[in-house]
Image 1 (cartoon, rainbow, N blue to C red):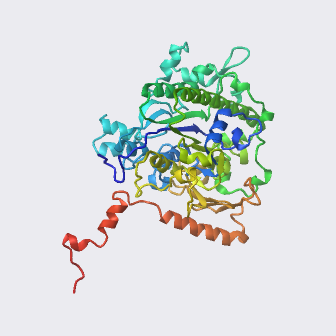
Image 2: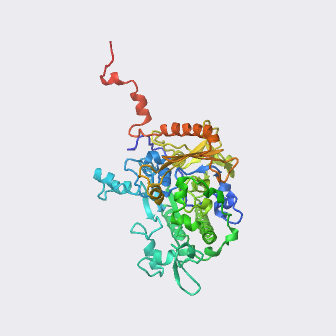
Image 3: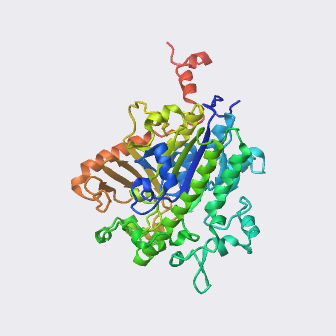
Length: 530
């Protein structure tokens, strides 16, 4: 029986493959128009399914963005507003919703889930029990968790795999995976972006991307004809931007998108952006040589990812799994790579906030939309309700803040669909806070993005506003122009209305509220009678 209100045990006989690439820009795919970058496997997905041209993250940061994917709730609701902020044990994730309905959610790769140790200890669940372990892992059954960006621990078999293939080191990730070797045989660290033009010391077949793909293929083989749900979550093309041969040299700097920045962006810059641009990664990406070194490597990592996805899809085709598997391909956010004089992500530009999103539904009902581009606004929070809907699991409506994409996939008429996307930022952990002399509770920002406008409300700082019709690259901030006050006022009111509608009453279902409305006399309470 279900222990989660709103869950159901009616399941569709279908598999789910939920693929996420870390820090992959929406405009770095062949099917989204990149003139040089070749991604045939991902492009083939777009031809078989629906590509969502206006998909947006609910945060431009790994952790909060992923928690919105996994809970179907906005960061202001789930509370994990930064990478180091644990998801509360009180939040219910997709894995738990599926488990209550008789399915499990397997993981190969990254989640960025931080255990809520304090919450687990409060419930006496921090001692390694089955439930405590599941909650600490965000509801995932970990085949091999590999978050990248630091040497793997016991949660991953990757270090042992590397040593078994001859990478003899106490820390083969640092010494081989993210290190390169020059023509003279000298070893250089990929933490220094000046070195990412070199080939990584690890062979392609032993790389992070290959290893993670291998875990997925092995899992599918073990499952055979039994239904499964798998989150395949790659750590690339996120930094360190070290690519193995031949991918490190697949593209030249002249085969990369031109950097989107203008000198006048630095004049009267918004105070928070000015502070961000003083951080080390932004100072590095303000150098032309950094952009021309990193962008080809970044594209090489994407080409490598596509090749291994092709290998995975070939395996699925041979096993007959493409016919009974719903496939999602997306990212958690993008990467500035020097655009707007910035490095990393976080801030409110489409470069970071817009996502690649392709969904392939194998059912006949989706035949009419195959190969189409859907332009309605969709968000990270829509993925959990979509997967529940696809599997026939009733969604806990009192919790979920997104909407199922299944009606859009099936070409059904949908009334009242959203016309804005929402995102937020908590930059209290960033050096920009110190530069601005702010308290940790002052570092919040909230954004709405419509077809025409990008609006940002900053705590204790000026608003931002970009007219996307006149300025699609978001170069000219109109947030302090008196002429735009009516537009900003309307969007400010819209934001307030949006925030007021968040679903914080999560301990009872909507049905329970409806049944209990006006029922006090049935409980023996007769107040107010004459």
